[in-house]
Every structure is written in C-alpha cells, then in structure tokens.
Length: 440
Image (cartoon, rainbow, N blue to C red):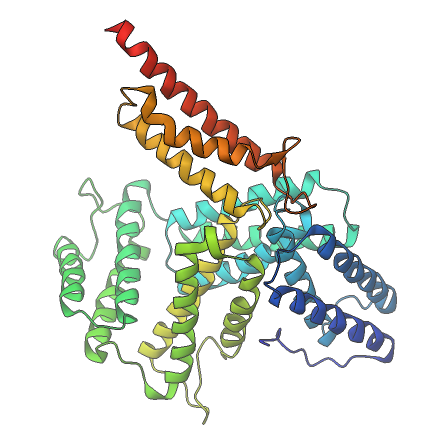
C-alpha cells in the first residue's frame, strides 16, 4: 500500500506492542475497505474506533512528556485515523467529530500548495473557510468522543485556519477593483496548466489564452495593469508578476508541445492516472464513491509530494527537474488534492446502503424543480410518473424508516427530509394545475 511518510526516530521497547496493535488495526480497516460485497455498517466501524483510541491512550502513557516524538507509530496511527474518519463518512456519520480528521489532512496539504504556488482565487479561500467553519461547529457540539481525538482534531483545524490566514494576508495588497484582474490571470494560468497535461495538445486553445494575455499586456501603462475602471490601483506587486508568469509558461508549453522531460515520465504517468481516476469519481461520485476509496489516492499523492526536496523533483541520479517539468508535476499534485477536497465536501450524510434511494430522490427533486421552473403542468395527470415514483419509494419504508434487511442504516433523517420535500413540490404543482382553470 502507499504508506504514510516514514519517520527516522526509533520505536522504543514500550511502544513496540502499540505499533504491532496499530498495524493489526490498520490491516482490519484495509480489509473492511476492500470488501465491496456488502455495505459498511456502524457496528463494523465503532469497535475499530474504540481499539484505536485505546492504543492512543497507551501511547500517551508510554511517552509522558515526550509527546513531540514522531516515529513509525505516529505514521501508522495517522493511517488508522485517516481510515476510520473516511469510514465514518461512508456510514453517513459525516457530522460527527471522527469524520473531520481526513478533511483536515487534505486541507493542510491543499493550503500548503496554494501558499507555495502563490496564485489562487478568492473563491478557493472562501470555500475552505466555509468548510472549516462547519467543522468547527461540529467539533464544538460533539463531546461524546475521546478527548484525545477531539483535541487532536482541534489542533489540526487551528493549523488549517493559520494557513488560511496566511493565504488571505498574501492577497491583502489587492484593492477590490484589482481583484477581477487577479482572478482572470489565475483562471488563465490554470487553463494553460490544464492544456499542458491534455492527451492531445491544442495550439489553438493556447493561442486563444495567449491573446487574452497580450491584450492585458497592451493595456499596461508605466508597467502597471489597469483595473476595471482603468486605474492602476493597489495590487501591482501581485498582478504584474502573475501576468509575466503566464506569458513565460505559454512559451514553455508551446516549446514542449505537451511532452514532459523523459526523466520524470514515470512520475507524470502516475499523476495522470490519479487525476483521471479522481476526475471520473467527481462525475459519478453520487452513485459509485465509497469515501474510503480516497485513502489510497491521497496516500499516493502524499508519497509523490513528499519525495520532493526543497520544493523540486529529482531524477534517479539526483538531478533536479527543469521549470517546465516542476510546474507540470506540481499542477497535477495540486489538482489531485483539489479533486479529493471536492469529493469530501460533496459527501452526503447518508449511509452507502441508502445512497441509491437518496440519489433517486435527488434526481426526482431536480426534475420537479425543472417542471416548476418551466411553468408547471397544465393537467394533474402529467404528474402521475412523479407521484408513482414517490409512492414506490415511500412504500419501501417500514414504520417510517428505510431498512436494508434487518438493519436501519444511518441517514434516515436526510432521506426522509428529501422525500417530504419532493412530496411538497408535487403537491404544489398539482394544486396549481387544479386551480388553473378556475383562475382563467
């Protein structure tokens, strides 16, 4: 498997039994993750969570004041906490504290890369800020879990918030009128980077992007870019270098024609595979994603990311990558972390056992919204297909709950709420159709 980063500190005798137990727990979690013959249940996950917390307490006792030590035990513990966090999401317990751990890991990586890249949009930061605010609220109201786990997640959220503040401070010199110019340049640079990694290189698409850059360059006066009002407002220290960076990258992409330095072809292929798989998941995640599947993809990204030295990649002989290869590989790593973030945010608080029903209701709601948007129906009979589908889903309930065998999966509230919403919309449309002739 793609393991966590290895630490050089040795494992002392007191911690070896803990390490062995954590490895055993991780193996159980990985076996549970690989078993797709049935859906994951809370009763499968909670005992493993308790086993992890027991080892955490033993580790704290063994270390005492040496709590800052980082060794192989911490590496395996992180694997266990990552997996148990994703399992909580898979069973629909997204709004409980253990589910937050994996998101903090992803956000820390994502923010580190945004900081290193030194270009990102304000929308990127707003999304992360909203996610962290929701996580903070979850942590504050959820006190039933281990204090150690809650404290650990609290510190990780604080680390995320600190990184987010640094990212905001970097953009603080941008005046509001200059923000659209900055956002446009960020969008263009990302488009160039995406074009650079396509299977078929498009010169026309690159020329279109470069034309936009030349137009911006021609509008400059005294080396400054104007804002939307034509003024050279604050933020030139950011927008001008970014424009130059975009133009330089255009030259490199055109020169390489979508081909990377052969020394880094293997790493490039691995990252392309990761991106392609995660891209497919974002298209079909509502129907095919089990959150625990993301563990392996994040670990693969982590290993490639951690192989860098001083921010760059090195070949087998210790020679650094050129600027084109470095930017190409870094773009793919950042894209991978970004896609994992999207998938985690989009995860519904519903057990995978109920996802087929939940997704049917989402589709049904979307159809009813379209009907309403387009003026409703002229005759109540037009609603029969929707009503029949709603009734068939409603009839699946036993005593108001959706069951799978004898189990009552997590997420009943979300599914029932969505079912009620669909019923209400269908009723409104039917009432409007029945009242129509009288109004005429």
